[in-house]
Length: 513
Image 1 (cartoon, rainbow, N blue to C red):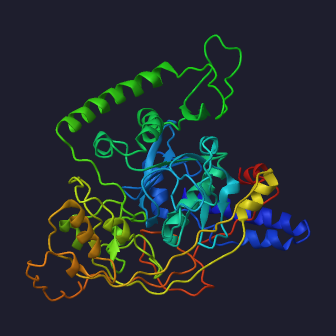
Image 2 (tube, rainbow, N blue to C red; image 1 turned 90 degrees about the horizontal axis):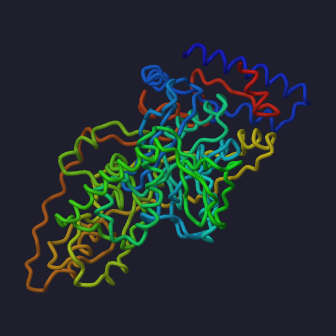
Image 3 (tube, one colour; image 1 turned 45 degrees about the horizontal axis):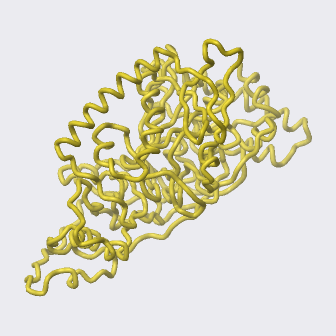
């Protein structure tokens, strides 16, 4: 498979490069054809995983995102027609709160179902590589929601996006590219606040977004029981999944997010499987609520989250609204290899003390703990890349518009203060917890006057196994084979074969046959 893939890329590159030159040496086309970042081959270990799971290199993919778990999943279609999980990537940074994006500038990463076509792939992103999520979709527009340029990209910096490391986005990008080469017109992206389990639904049962979450859980359940990409439609300002023509209808239903739903049916086998799953989920949910499962705390101004494997490596790192590691796994995480280069500009999630000060003193105790601060090391300086669009050029030939990545980077955080003594109320507990990693917060004002000052132990030496991140190289072909080495801007991964864009997707695909 590896040799066949390489031969295909080389043959396509030669044939399409010649066509570009014969067309008049268009400088933009030549530039796009030599974009090494966008044309990195799929890593050998992923190819081996595909073989083991009975997947083809060019078979369709599907992506799922989870904020609370800070994970991105890439699913790929197997030869039996169903999707199977290929790889799970920890998310380096996402911003906002649990819940959908509502308006431009709210820093929210979107939630819902989106479609990614070749025009949304941006190989010349300012954040190494990226693809546009497609927000707002028809449902978002029907509700008057605004926002633009919401990306999945590299650089581990987010302002309403899902940010990965450069090595991670290089792999994800290559998988999307190969699926397009195989004929997939668009791959589906499903973005959720958390895994839609009865436990998580019970913990967040009082969240004002619950009605929306129950609606998108329908699509989550359809995928879970069928392992097929659910067909997504919109009507009456809501999602509809796997709708088909009614038995007595003469044509397929026409959906409009702002209009009344047409007559439609859901295939009986899917409907029955989903119904059984939801009955089981609801029964478990009822037991959890009856047992008094605590309600998760609402956001008190914390901006998003990051996966724990990154938080342990960032100065004053915090998982924020994502799941925090337990104390037993902290040392193991610090000693493990980072899934990519962490730039020095990473700004971990931080709480808003003003919001904490305004919290009511009678706030009930809840299940979700305050964001956990974890020990880390300071990464080295990063490099940056920018440019225009290889797939955008391809999409223009197909008659589909492109988009650019405009997410802004953030600044590094400062050294945190030591933790304060245990508070006496829920609100003071929250305030004390956030003061542990907010620079400049005077925790002495939070403790009662008659409370003796705690004795602070000397700061332990940093673990020898903790590594300092390397400077980010221009090419990051794999997050698993080697640790990220330092490299010059002109370096290129051995074996990377540039692929030249042609006049259309069809002609490019034909050249590979």
